[in-house]
Amino acid sequence: MVAAFALIPLGYVIVYAASLGGQEMWDLLVRPRMGELLWNTSRLVVGGCLLSLVLGVGCAWVVERTDVPARNLWHVLAAAPLAIPAFVNSYGWSSLTPDVEGYTGALVIVTLSYFPLVYLPTAATLRGLDPAMEEVARSLGFGPGWTFVRVVLPQLRPAMIGGALLVGLHMLSEFGALQMLRFPTFTTAIYDQYKSSFNSAGANVIAAVLVLCCLVLLMADLRLRSNRRLARVGSGAKRDVVPVRLGARRVPVLLMLVALSAASLGVPIYSLIHWLVVGSSTAFPVGEILTAAGTSIGLGLAAAVITVLIALPVAWLSVRHRTRISTSIERSAYTANALPGIVVALALVTVSIRYVPGIYQTYLLLVAAYAIMFLPRALVSVRSAAEQSPPVYEDVAHGLGMGRIATARRVTLPLIAPGIGAGCALVFLAVTTELTATLLLSPIGTTTLATEFWTSSSSVAYGAAAPYALLMVLISLPATYLLARRPALGVGA
Figure 1 (tube, helix red, strand yellow):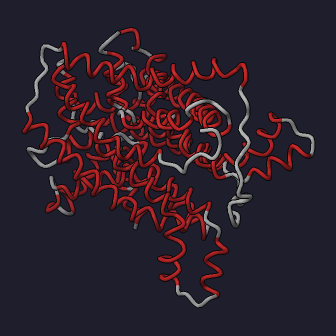
Figure 2 (tube, rainbow, N blue to C red; figure 1 turned 180 degrees about the horizontal axis):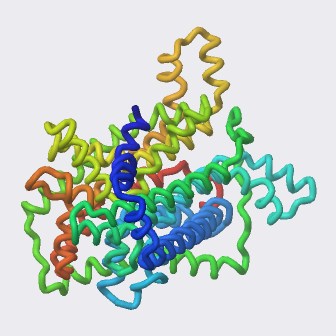
Figure 3 (cartoon, rainbow, N blue to C red; figure 1 turned 90 degrees about the vertical axis):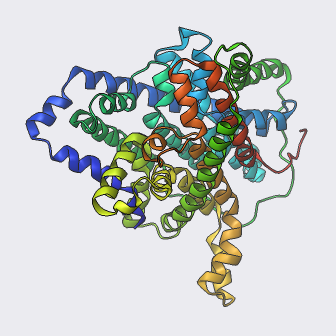
């Protein structure tokens, strides 16, 4: 049922594309415009994933394994960009200077918004590693570099691949930020096609190509994951990790951390404050702002709970009962994440009108769209926690006479609770900043912070858009704090 639910948008795209004649589809595919979009989307995804891996893994290693001063502060600052939506980040940069338009600007700004998706799981994995394994490697003659490559890096692989997959899927489906930066990709082209001719054949063919790009990412993820079991009993030796002393490298490392925080947080926050103070269109309609904020929070909470409940059985099957069927179910959940929100929304509009007209233009349909779109965020978090959960604990519980439900309640759920919390936080963050599906599926008269921000910023009313953007950031902070929360560092923090 979960796979069928998640595949509704994909089925819509395939059925619509198949209804076209072969010659018509070929003519649409071989257009020069299609080649340009494929090149732009591919280089953005590849460049964004690589840059996010460099920033995410580099920051995680500096924060968790070196004696850099104020490590707790840098940890919070590295996770904080998740509280700023990518299109607000783009608004901050593009409203101050037009030089950020184009590929380089899009690559840098979107990466600054998404690199925490790599940083957070990598830092959490580094924190949980048993230092004894690295000590054994060094006792065998490995230097710090080879110890990292041969011992640490393989254990970081699931976190790095999972984070890079999320970054890649977000790059594929990103719309608002790229539209502001005037960098055309498949997603912006689909929106333009729908805007010019509602539900056009060209848009659906582009969406079909976008789905193929998503499948390529998923296949790469599947190939890169090894079958090696990483779960172990206990957390290893209960002692502090000896931090790497930076010495003369401390100042350059600190400067790089400051520059990264200034680019990812300082510029958008400065821009919001700037337009609030000097914007000619700045206004504070308190009633409208509170209504939009309440709707955003309510939708975010409802979607977070429902999406994680859907993700739980899928993650459990893919980890504990890994078969081709369970793997296919898990992979099917990722496809909708690569589709733009407008395609998911149109698919649900078509299906609801034809088969269940009673839910058309209701919050139920809107939350269903959120669950389809953001299921991968919950799935990656819960799956990662389940992989780290030793199955031997469940075997012991069964051996002591516990049934499956009691084992799940008393053993399994407490072990994967951090993953469940992280999944809820990620979905909440995504829903409170979602734009295109909300515009199309929300009941008439519904406003959210994202839709109000987009309406104002599209008409270049930067001052009017600033209060909504600032409130989006403030609402996202608790969820970001939950994601960034960690045990106290054991050394030199």
